[in-house]
Amino acid sequence: MKKKMRICNIWMALVVLLLACHCEGTPPKLTENPAIKANQPLNIILLIGDGMGLSQLSSSFYFSDQLPNFARFKTIGLSNVIAANSKITDSAAGATSFASGIKTFNGAIGVDMDKQPVKNIVELLSKENYQTGLIATSSITHATPASFYAHVASRDWEEQIAAHMATSPIDFFAGGGLKFFQNRKDGKSILDLLKTNGFEVHTNHLEKEIDASKRHAFLLGEEDMPKMIEGRGNFLQESTQKALNYFEENESPFFLMVEGSQIDWGGHDNDAEYLITELLDFDQMVGSVLDYAEKEGNTLVIVTADHETGGFTLSAKVTGQNSKDEDEHDYNVIVPTFSTAGHSASLIPVLAFGPQSAQFSGFYQNSDVYHKIRAALAQ
Ligand code: MG
Ligand code: ZN
Image (cartoon, rainbow, N blue to C red; front, top):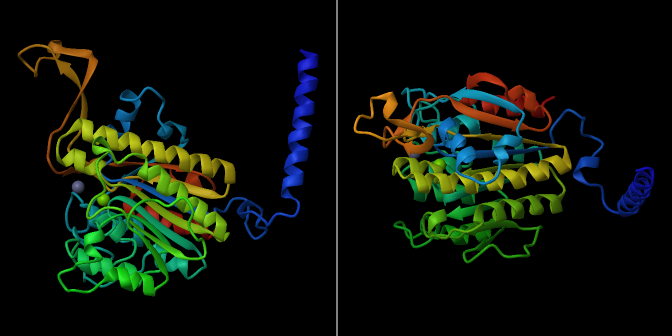
């Protein structure tokens, strides 16, 4: 036992020595920035599972062989996602609440009740020398990502939304939506505009090496990215890792929003397999973000959703003729069921990790997610 301990100590000393050698002469890492107060996050990563209510999140505990990465969070809150003009929100109003800290009407992208543009967190932080990035498994012009760079009165104006990307401060984005950037109804090429504004545009795949001194646009689908069950592969995790590497190379703080867009679509389709495969893909990406945040110690990670979709329930299997009879249920078999093809009004889980994450426990409004992020950065 003692001998083992001694060997262990020698190993520890070696590791410390190696680490010390490695640090000497290398440029300061983000964690070593002396301007950073210990309790203040440097980077913000906001992970949105579109349509991910508590039952959706719960399904990751039952439909996977491993404990989900969601289980690694210690701070958990619940948010009320009601929109300004209706009890049940859509993704546009919901994402505008996260991006700009206001409540607005369903369909609104970065505008208030008077359809006036409201500054979003990407615009504010980019003025403070932050790098910014957006990733989605939908078109990048879809309501959730759009609310972080565009200002239009309707989520359906996706060509207009694409044009807003070219003049936005976004440094890195990845998703689908190529058709809104080229061969447009108005004849304009937003791809050319992106290039003029310093973007390197990639339309084939996630290149291994990218030039960190440039801005990067990955438009990898005509419209949506494929479903997981149709072979999307590891796009979400890989593009997120690519964004993190890119930000690290540039050595200034960053804000990154990553959306698991299609959890919502599985809900709308009342298709449990579609929903759960998208959810597990999202959880996989959450895991690699948590690995990064644990390693760096300076990154606030928030996982939440804009709303619940499908009235999703993890019900017991009905064994007899009468689904209203409790005795005719098998409590050992979970059968996912849906009560609507639309969204529902359930409160939404918020999971947080990193400096200032404690602020995210309790009950609050979805717009408070924005205000809590701003407050965390102002500590
Ligand atoms: Mg969405
Ligand atoms: Zn939806």
